[in-house]
Each structure stands twice: as structure tokens, then as C-alpha cells.
Length: 545
Image 1: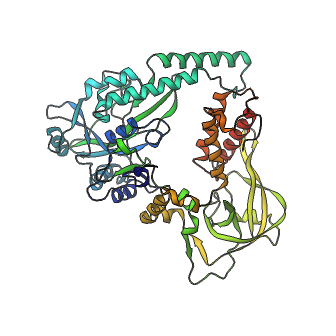
Image 2: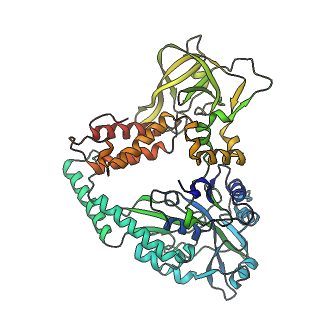
Image 3: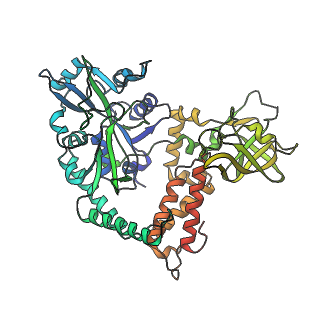
């Protein structure tokens, strides 16, 4: 492990409370003499890594800003500025986006700066910027700011070139090379018939899919979209004209770059991402760079994930309760981290269980056999929502806790989901009520504590001081399986078994992606994990996990 890995100088920060909270943590990390990343910084980090690494597999909000306004001569221009201008500070960003979020009538869209500020940008008063003639750009495409671009189009696209900065050409060529390699792999892969097509229809679909991937592997693949703001679109071409810009103002947004994704479009599928305008209600992931930090040399550390940190380091996050609580905790849902059981923090009303551990369970007695719990669908049927009193109503008299066994199932009537069911196992538990675990939201707002835990994760000497959960064990097994596809000596594959290596790799990769983003309260997550695991074991001819 290198020095940069132990003490990262470039780190990403997401916060559930949005941009101001993420900004404060990214700035605190950057420290004196540090800064927040622009899009050219992210481009540099991606050029120094490969798909699969954090820079490619994560979206980033950047301090590259884009402005659409009108010159003194009456023409429309785009101005792209990297880390300078009215939106290079938190106050400036909030002022621009307050055009939308302070509008009580909810009729305003996007951000705005004054025309005076726009003219100062145009004149170079803030520093060097790039100017793109808006009318000329819109004539390049039938649907400007919305279509998927091939590599050759992206190379010459002036808006992308301005957003990406000086390494634009190298970035596009690198992305295109990765895309061609991916298309080559996909052209040899025959997907399963998951839609129940006839054999002839499925074969035709596979042939059409294979030909598309083969063409894109040797020609000019689609790789990127250069979008405008979705809720404040720059132009309505070809149906109508351009958006009217309010007198005395210019449209203003930060620029976000998306993660690599398998994008379906125009009866094709591509390995692509988007470069678009950040909207105020979008998720935010800002990158802090310490003084002397270089994303091209060190990459981008994925940053703290408070939920994962809490589960991994829960022992150091227990907080004493004073005075100690001597009353019973009541009827609670249970959860498990490694070999340790916890009561969950209680929920209010009919909603999903919190899946946040509160008290450590010190004794647990199983009461009877699992009982079928049935509740009506409340809202979207992909969420398992119910009231705690509904579960208590079917519990044995001496039970004070429950744990759902297996996965929730939907009941359907006339094509509509009406009820949800799941087996509930009841317990009689005792808990340590002298301590409770810090909540995820509290940890998310405690920058110092999160960074202590991140540093502990980055220190090899501390690796054996944390508990390995079954989920982590499964993830490690999958990673070994992926490695073994190129190294059979690892012993995870049976040489005598006629294996479909590409199919195994794809299924293991999909399952690992699900496990890296656990959502135990979401029914579809459990369903997808079960489906992927069953299919992977079937391909291997034995139970790997």
C-alpha cells in the first residue's frame, strides 16, 4: 500500500443534506491552501486510472460552472469557468441557485447570476474562461444538449471541450478505447432469455445485439452526452426556439460528470456517461484536494460512507446513556452485524424498519416457529412498509422482538399489488441499555469522527481490529472469483466443469455491485441478490457462497 493510500490528498464527499453540508466537509478536508475539484481535475484522475476505480465509477459535482447569457451585441453565448467566477464560493453558489429554491411559487428553474456578473465573466475580469457561440453550437445537432455522442463527435464538440478542459482529447480517446474493449467482450456474450421469448426471437435478438457490439468495437462507439439542465433546458429545438432569459440575468449552473454506465438508447447499448448541469435537488459529491494534492497522481479516494463506517466500527461508536435507562426498550425489530445482534432504532408510523442498530442484545431466546406476517401495500410495492403494532398483534405474549426470515413477497389481484407477506421469527431478548449506538445521521455530521475511522481503514495495522461481517465475506469471495477467471490456480473454479466464463464474470460482477450498495429495507434488493446468487451457483454447478 502506497503512501497516498495511507494519507489521501484527494477525497470525495457526499452528504445526504445536500451541497452546503458536502461543501463544508470537502473544504475542511482540503484545509489551508487546498481547493475543491473542477471537472479537469476529475478528467485527470480518470486518465490516471481505469474503469472499476473510483474516478470512473462515481459521479462528481465540480467547481466548473457554465453560464448562458446575452452579450452586448444581443447574441447568446455559453461561458465555461473552472474554479473562478461568481460560483466559486459556497455563498455564490447558494445565491445563484436561490433563484429556484427561494421561489415560493415554484415557477423558477435553475440558477441565475446578474447580467453584470455575466459581462464581467465575458470580459475576463475573474480570470480565463472559454466562450462558445450558442447559436452556432445548436446548429451542430438536431437535438442539441440531449443526444448521445459518438467518440468522433465528442472530440470536436466545443461544449464538451470547454467543460473537460485541456485534457479533453486524451480523455475522449481513452474512454473510446475502453468502450471498444467492452463492446468486443459483449459481442461474444449471449444473454439469457429473461423475457420468455421464443427460441427464434431470442436468437434474432442475440444476433442483432452481437452485431451492434461488434460494429461499435471496431468503429466509432457512442460514449457520452453533453446535456443541459433538465429542468431549465437551454433550447426547445427543433420543436420551438430557445428558452427566454429574464432581463438582467444569465442562467448559471455547476457542472456534474456521471459515472460510467451501460446506457440503453436507440435500440443499442453503450458504455457511456454524461456531462451535465447540476440542479439544486440533485445528489452532490464534491472532491476536496489538499495543498500539493494531484488527482492525476493519487486518484480520488471514495470518501467516508457513514452507514458502512458505523457497521464496521460499531464498537467505537457506542455512547453511554446517563442516567442509565432501566426501563425495557419495548417491542423492537432486530438486526445483525457480524455475529452481534442489535435492536433497531424505533420507527414512527407505517414505514420501513430503520435498519439502524441501537442497543446490543445480550441474551436472545427464540419463541416458537416463524409466523406469516401479512400487511397491505402502502404506496409503492417495492418498499416493505408496515406499523410495528401490526407485527406485535401476531407475536406470542412473551415476545419482545422480531426478525423477518427470508424476503418479503407481494400478493397481486387483477394485476395490482394489494398485500405483502414475510415470515417473522419472534424472540425474547435482553439488551444493554446503558449504551446506544450513534445514529448514521449523527455520524454523517461528525466530520472528525468519520475521518478517524477512514484513517483507521487506510492503516494496514488496524485491519484485524475490525469484525468481518457475512456480507464482507461474500464480497471477498466474489472478488476472488473474479480474479480466478484469469488465474484458475486460485482453486475457485472446477476444471472439469464446462463453464461459461463470461456469464460467470457478469453474474459475479452484478452481484458484487448489489452487495456494495446494501439496501436491506428494499424488497427488490433482496430479490435481485437472491436471483443473482442462484444464477451464479447454477453457472458454477455448486454453491460458491
